[in-house]
Image 1 (cartoon, rainbow, N blue to C red):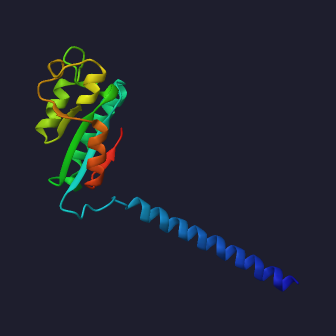
Image 2: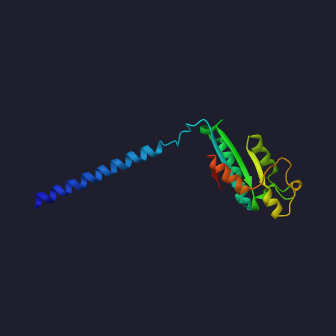
Image 3: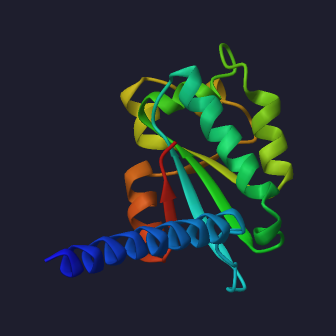
Length: 156
C-alpha cells in the first residue's frame, strides 16, 4: 500500500510540475502575441453612428482614427461612417462640436454620410448639416448593402 501511495504522490507532483511548465509556456507565448496579420489587399468597414450621446460620437471618431493608425492596415482600408437616427445631431451646423474632427476623417479618406430618412423624420434639411456630408436614402439600407458586399459593420 505504501508503494502505491508513493507512486500516486510522485504522479501528482509530476502533473503539477507539468501544469506549471505548460502555464509558463502559455504566458511566454501570450506575451509575444502581436495580433492578426493583415494578409488581404484591402479591408472595408462601415461605422454605424445612431446615437447623439457625445461619448458614443467621440468613441466612433476615436475608433476610426485608431484603425486608420493601425500599421497592419496602412493603405488597405476603405471606411465609411453612416449617421442616422440620433447620430444625425453630430452633423448639425448649429450645435455640433465635431466639424473639424469629421473634416479630418474625410481628409484621411473616410466617407462620411447621413441618412435622408432621418432628416425627414426630424424635420431637418441638408442645409442644416455640414456642407461636406454625403447622403444615402437609408442608413439601415446602407448597412445591409455594405454587409452583403462583405464590409465589416462596427457599432461603437
